[in-house]
Length: 162
Image (tube, rainbow, N blue to C red; front, top):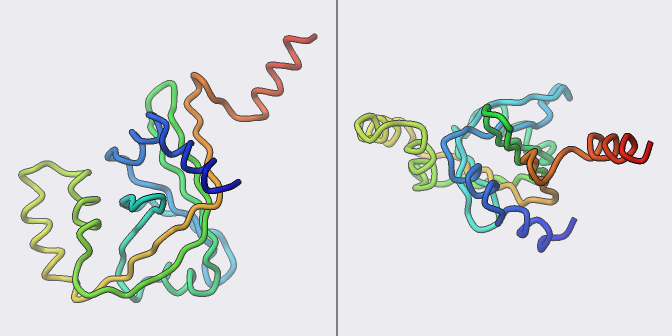
């Protein structure tokens, strides 16, 4: 999949709702032991990249140094579901303090009243963070209105022809 195709998917209204909404991403990577991991995590978007910030000594940072291939899913629990599936390669950058994007991502999941105290606590806790930047190599949007999983689409075609 090329970058233009990825950009077209990310530009769709449902994709934009998911990228800018309050739902966390489910972030999948291989642990140092080779077994898969998936965690819910806050994120923000910079251009056509997904960014996440974390403490420098987390297990995911060590694992991503070994194997930078990742996958993310952002979805809603409502019916019909909206699902944005993403794959890419992670790069890591140690930055001083707390990235602005991390604060923005945090604000998406809390009230305006909760935010100032949380932001103050985060800024006091982290002297530095690692920003994980995911450069996308593949994307798919499933909205179950205009797009559905390929296997389901094939089954519908098969039954219709039958």
